[in-house]
Every structure is written in C-alpha cells, then in structure tokens.
Image (cartoon, rainbow, N blue to C red; front, side, top):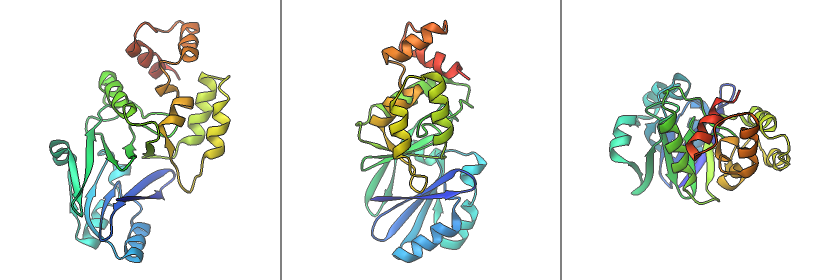
Length: 232
C-alpha cells in the first residue's frame, strides 16, 4: 500500500491510499487532482472515508462518489470495524477522539494519516471539549515507532513553528525541522515531532521547567498536557 498526498483549499491535505488496482480516498477534497492521479495509474477508487466530519474534510465527497462509483465508508462503520480493506490488505483505523468525537487515524506501513488530531508541529483544537480523550489519543499515536510518518489534515507548519518558538525559544531543533519542511510533500516522523512539537514534549525537562516558570500545573503527565493545551 502507498500513500499520495494532495493539497486543496488554502491548507487542507487529502490522501489516496492505493495498491496496484484500487484506492481509498481519505478527506478527498482535491477532486480534480485525485481523478487525474487515478487515471494516470489506472486505479479504481473503491472507497471514500474521512478522518472526521468537519465540512472542510468532507468537501468533494459527493463529486468523487458520483464520478467514480466508490462507496462511502462512514466513521461509525470504521470505528466498529477497526480496519478497512484495499486489495485484500487491511488498513488499521484508530478511533482518536479529542478534536472531535468522531476523529479517526488511518495506519498503514509506517504511516499515520491523522486528520486534525496531530499536525506536523502541533495538535488540533479540542472542539469535543474532552481533553482527557484527546490526551489518550495523542498517547496512542506516540506509541508507534519513532520513524512513523505523520500525514496530517492541514499544513500548519509555519504557524506551528512560530508557536513552538514562543513556548520554547531556546529550542534550536526548530530550525532543522523547518529546513526539512517541503510544502509540496508535508510530512514528518514522530522522532522529529518529539524534538519540536510542544504538545508531544510534556515529559521533556525543559518544557516542564517552562511550565513551572509560568505557574502552570506539572505534577502529573496529564497536568502537563492540560497546561500545554491552555497556552495561547
């Protein structure tokens, strides 16, 4: 299984997960480029899915379904099944609530397609209001090997690194992270996220010290997560 990324709107990112004959679209808002890629590889789009139900991620779904005859797999179906199959290969689907209650992450071959749960350099807003669930989702994603690639729902890298500098101005890894950033192919691995993403650095002594200096709670890991999520 392979992954192809497509940019649409200002900063949204769509994905195709594909094999030799079939493909699954995830947040397929880049309708034209997706159809062109399918035709160029002689692929049949069989399934369409979403990381969550926000309109910027479901945009283009009806056009794709009508143009290709693909089937929509709902988030509820995916949560119940825990996987989706393309060409007899299973793509694991993780329920990762926090940004929204229906947020999902797709996992295959050393890749996480994380939607608005985990971005490259930051995390999503907690629109669900359930910070505990969001924390558990982030911890679950952090359990994957350090070389695992993160493919997010938006390209927020510039904003994320500006915020990371505000939180941790002495972090010189940020420059290396930005040097590796490619707006034509937006990705990072978990190892690099642990170096710069404030929301994955809640156990780093330097971040704990910064939180203490701001009189924020640091006693438990979850305290530190809540403290980081309170920063603006």
